[in-house]
Amino acid sequence: MEKVIINSYEDFEKLIGQQIGVSEYVELTQERINLFADATLDHQWIHVDTERAKTESPFKSTIAHGYLTLSMLPHLWNQIIEVNNLKMMINYGMDKMKFGQAVLSGQSIRLVASLHSLANLRGVAKAEIKFAIEIEGEKKKALEGIAIFLYYFN
Image (tube, rainbow, N blue to C red; front, side):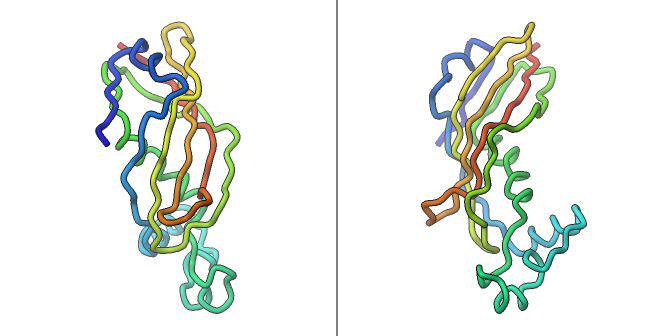
């Protein structure tokens, strides 16, 4: 799927209530999980101890940190959309975020996103993006919610 190109607030407005796009799948490898553990100082065995996880975890595998799954959102979002004519874009918040299913080490995830709402706040576009992070081959979503971004157009 090609990236959606946005050049103005009016371009964004046309997408309200519509699916914007679907990203490519990205694998959450054990190496990526370990690097995230190092970055966040969260070395809980369920994430990093592959041998223990095989025998003690209900998943029989290590799992990605939920916040690692969430942290993939900007990378996956950039595969879907290109917003031009910006001074800057700011993450404003999250709403109704829910982790639905653990992502096992080695599974791949992708983003499905739609424009939930858009508001013009004195020249700043407040975009609420309804998103789902899907796990390849699984029906249940890894993560769902609404990401809120502020777009400062030139």
